[in-house]
Image 1 (tube, protein in one colour):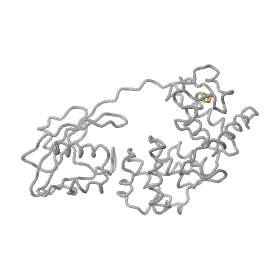
Image 2 (image 1 turned 90 degrees about the horizontal axis):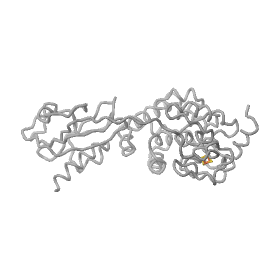
Image 3 (image 1 turned 120 degrees about the vertical axis):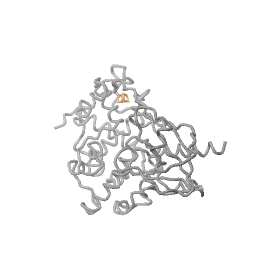
Image 4 (image 1 turned 90 degrees about the vertical axis):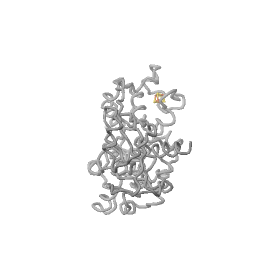
Length: 354
Ligand code: SF4
């Protein structure tokens, strides 16, 4: 049972939220519950992506697929294509899989408990808690980066992340009220995004100024603390830009599992820890060519490593029998090419224009 000072904290924050809540396309108007489809879609998009970027993608998705059944009926390719630019394509594949499960096994309605939500593809503890709280007003405690910051400062939790996640989660759970838990979760998100910012928090505008342990200690900027990051390793690969006599380029689909799974690519070797000997790498090309020419290097950074991709261009007059599709560069816009592969395309075309 919540004790009176905590009730006061909740009331202060909800009163602040009623005046200052952000208007976001996936949010319901005050006093109404949000559409579970919208909450789920926005939460999946917001993982690793900013609100400003997500807004236009969200609008595009709900205009194109107004109901979860519409998204479930779409081809995976269409979804991956619409996802282009958001990155982390496993999210898009799971999004599509989850839409099919909800549309098929749950007759288009999201299950209404945190436990059942956790059973859906691509829905982890945070997303399940967010949907439960925001769409169903269940007293769940989603802790995203914003809430992590607010709670770690309010309670001055000094354990560095990731160890600090557990005490922060426990403190967030202890704060979560039975009344208006969905608004409370969104209020904490908004407070973190607009007032309790990573640098120079605006404590003078904060409804919790008087209760905040970090403000009292004068060190709000320091929390949450983070354990030092390990340096990212560098991996190496070779990409093969192969043209037929009509200028079409060979593209193929990457395996479903793994990084950029299901996306289209200019065929490339494995990405490994040691640089490739380019002469040896041509044996990995899906077609033979007499005239391989090196066209520089493309660099890209993924979450866990840097990639350096040497680009080789070659011609094969007859088109060859390689698996994949032959596409003219003017028509690449219709292909689900991830950012890395767009860099390869730019590298080759700009070299040609120079
Ligand atoms: Fe964040 Fe300052 Fe509010 Fe504390 S008082 S929660 S540090 S904005």
